[in-house]
Length: 229
Image (spheres, rainbow, N blue to C red):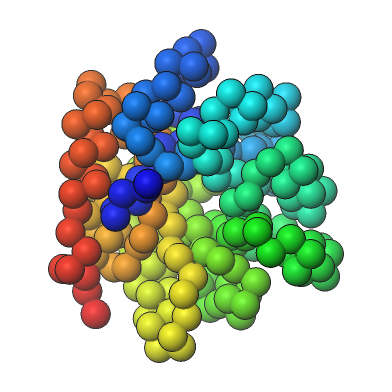
């Protein structure tokens, strides 16, 4: 069971030569989700994981940990269909890429009610632009760094975006979750929680920590009763 304060390590920051060791650690910590970044070299300049790595990882670990697939790709509908077919049931698409594919995405979501669909949005995208998609989104993924690169510093502008989403959610009695991805550490993670974030994606700060177990324990103990607003 995922802990009350939801921490999802991003596999992009793990040691690629020892992915099994990284996955085994997440299982040992009883972490419910691992964040799996897919980059196509078009929407972002880098290329990361794809289907060929997902297949053996999912095959070995899917009964122990779920995969949260973050699609940083130019053709989100195609990859949504592919990763769903491979077993992923929580997938986020970027707002900046979905406009031409929106009817198809809406049909796919309606056809597959077990899919939890997220709308990710980059730092330059205003929160007001993504809010109209609340009927499609099970969660919003606030990017607190520029997509496509690991190890960046947290962008403070993300805090206001979290607050806006949380206010919008409460004011309209909505149930979507708020995730934050990028530059999460003990300080920024606590600030995100105060603003209303439900889930924190931690990459470098988790996998590059001298003691990932202690870091995880610290983040899972963040209080939720000191939230702003």
